[in-house]
Length: 85
Image 1 (cartoon, rainbow, N blue to C red):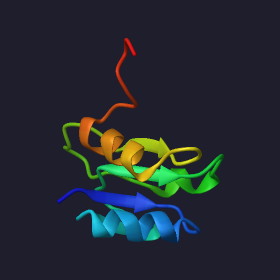
Image 2 (cartoon, one colour):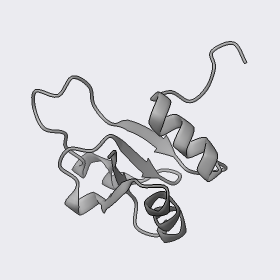
Image 3 (cartoon, helix red, strand yellow):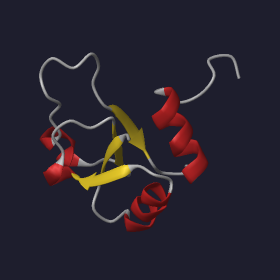
């Protein structure tokens, strides 16, 4: 199960992600996470810290203008979209 840190104030998105089977935590509870979801410019991103020894870090996702399907794609593929689309 992928672990997602989400900015406070995005409760609707948090509920949607939980229904889709993701583990959702707040920024203050985020040790190792697969993705960080925020909206606009959020200063709290620096509090997210991945454990040492991981192969890769968390992907940062700005939720502004994105659907739940867009966000799920980004989480699963670890990219924003096709390079050639």
